[in-house]
Amino acid sequence: MLQYAAGSTRAFELLYSKHKGPLYRYFVRQVNDQQLAEDLYQDTWSRVIKAASTYETSAKFTTWLYRIAHNLIIDHVRAVKPVDSFTEVFEPEQDCESQLGSDQASLETQLLDSQKSNLLKGCVANLPQVQKEAFLLNVEMGFTAAIIADIAGATLEATKSRIRYAYKGLKECVDLKWQGANHD
Image 1 (cartoon, one colour):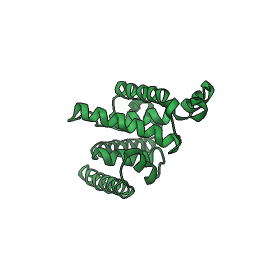
Image 2 (spheres, helix red, strand yellow; image 1 turned 135 degrees about the vertical axis):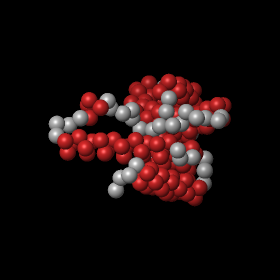
Image 3 (cartoon, one colour; image 1 turned 90 degrees about the vertical axis):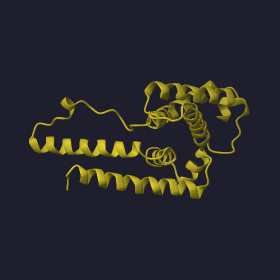
């Protein structure tokens, strides 16, 4: 980022290519609306470009970038509260034709995996926003609690609690829904 601030467009290209996929997925998972995710994604990069001349290395670039992204999501949530569009996470389902295997055991396994995946998606979607964000940043991005705390502007202990409660809530939700679906 310092090289980009000094005028190197190649440095920006490298930053962009390194972070574009994970950052876009972060937005898609948080807002579950591809158009809104695209808008927030573009807005994040616009802010990076505008802030280049004043960028200071007080944190890792990744932490700074996701802090911008986090703040944009918070601003959006505040603007449209109550938000009911945070309903699903992860990638869209594949169509059934592509999931069907050649033998019955494979088909049953695929259907069971699909049911588990849908169940987990629903449970993640039902987490409180702060827990969902902490969980996704931890699981998908591999960020530590300390980095997530910096991004979210929360204390380390609060962030650890959010992650812990997210896991606990997911386990309870999955167990409850799996039993409710009459599975062993």
